[in-house]
Image (cartoon, rainbow, N blue to C red; front, side, top):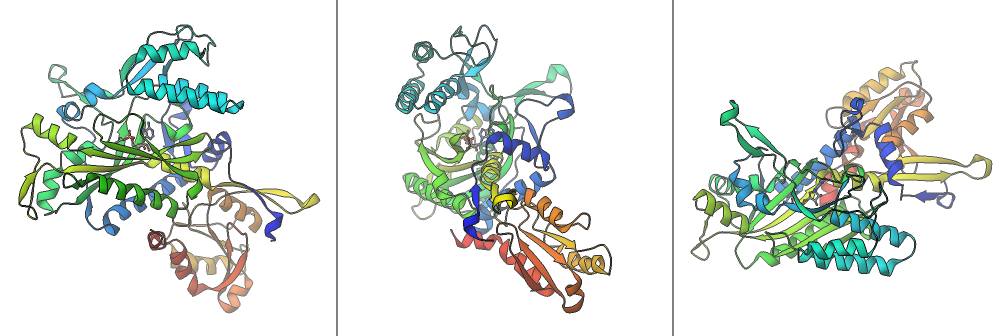
Amino acid sequence: MESNQKAVTTEGKLKDIISHAKEYGFVFPSSEIYDGLAAVYDYGQYGVELKNNLKNLWYKTMTQVQGNIVGIDAAIFMHPLTWKASGHVDGFNDPMIDNKDSQKRYRVDHLIEGHASALEEVGNKQEAALLVEKMNSLLAKDDFDGLRNLIYDNKIACPISGTVNWTDIRQFNLMFSTKIGSVAEEADVIYLRPETAQGIFVNFLNVQKTGRMKIPFGIAQIGKAFRNEIVARQFIFRMREFEQMEMQFFVRPGSELDWYKFWKETRIKWHAALGLPTEKLQFHDHDKLAHYANAAVDIEFEFPFGFKEIEGIHSRTDFDLKNHQGLSGKKMQYFDPEINQNYIPFVVETSVGADRLFLAHLCNAYTIETVGEGEEQKQRTYLKFHPAIAPVKAAIFPLTKKDGLPEKAAELVEMLKYDFNIVYEEKDSIGKRYTRQDLIGTPFCIAVDHQTLEDNTVTIRHRDSAQQERLPMHEVHGRIAYETSFKRIFEKL
Ligand code: GAP
């Protein structure tokens, strides 16, 4: 096929991507038969494969490849004092405002940003930028009266009621709480962790001592986190139950900003190596630093709804370890033999949301291509995932259900299934089978035909180009292993 016959659209509107994700088994609304639960989603049969591939890649990068980082898997429930020490009980709040007519509650920054986006859409870019700038400066000072005035001055109305009848701005804690204990009277309030990082901090000494770790070293963890997000928006971008992939890197005090720079560069390169285009990735320095940070930046990806955070890199100082030491009474110190000193290490954190990374890759992969000309022109939709993260690596198709072709194809299945997630299909025309695999992003479709019976060769059809090539059957395993290998990604780092 000539490349000038193609018109490729990779943008994809979010609503089309959401429908595609549901229709082809990637993401379903949670408990959908009961009309779903706001901001909670389930991953389907292909979604779980894609997400697991992303998680595995992240975990391997951090542990196996980096070398001085080890993993843990801490519990979701933690001692309630953990959240006092971390500052989440007192400081994990978002300013909210309620509309008195619709009774709807909004995060103040989301409400104002929504208005700024609407201004931008009608061409008032400067006005939008000024509004966001004013908002950031007021947020940085926790100036709630100023923020309320900004909402009134700009006549920012509730999207539901259309009125500007707003309450005062109040802070709401985002942590979910529940009770622990077998008898009600013994029950104590306990939180669902709002970040996985604290499981790492409280285990710092356990890991350092049992692993005889020398600073600088890191601890990595993948796990669920929970936040009572008031405004559920943008599909799996902002969820109440989500997964984080966090790594705390423990360093000598004074060296943290060098390590911060190192991790900033390393992490953005990682995203690009996985296939997110560099022009769709950018850094965004925090306007307001979190209570624990002395430097912080977001890596943003350009979603169909604009550039938004997928990962945060934070220089967290010794805030967490120092506070845990204070509240627990246990020393959180490290003896550094090189300088003969005891100190509380400083920490640089990298924190990426598995679900946001998933969404970034789904948006990036969603491709609609116009092929052919004139009467012959038609559209082809496919997901152009990097082969290493594609949910299914290869689909095996006997050309027909007879003449011994299924038996021959079964030999190929046997050769591949222990190392790769593959599918076998013999129903429908080969064209329809190719289309089904395109829609879930399978990079290779392998057809077994009559020639295979004669010379043991098969055709491999490549998803993105739709080109086919003939290959000896015994070379198929090696080819798929090469194309889907994690190593090829790491080589780009
Ligand atoms: N330990 C630091 C921390 O939690 P954060 O910026 O609040 O920092 C880190 O969160 C990452 O977690 C974000 O970059 C995002 O990818 C993901 N994340 C945060 N809140 C989320 C939510 N409600 N839904 C989905 N992902 C979320």
